[in-house]
Length: 124
Image (tube, rainbow, N blue to C red; front, side, top):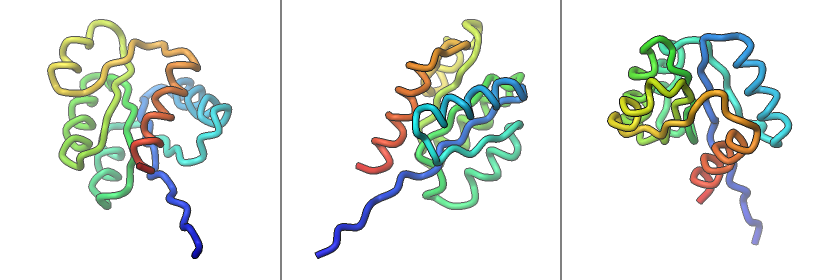
């Protein structure tokens, strides 16, 4: 009997700063994450979340000058875990919205842990 390998859904990352998108992409590669999709704005991320129910294992969002609220809402409606990486000024608001807050800048170990959490949840 063959055992089918279950692949995790995509991990969506959205940040309006090019340097952060490149940094997280490199961190993902170093962590062996091959299922990362990167976006530069809330609108395209929300549209991607609406495409199918199984599109994402998790979402990592920057504060996006308030756009994080739309990303969090769309992810929560789809039942997808979401982490917001931002400055300390958003901590209480992000947690009140039911999302996980991680202070920016996050180091490699923190980002690897987020990736592992999303991939583990997607394959269990």
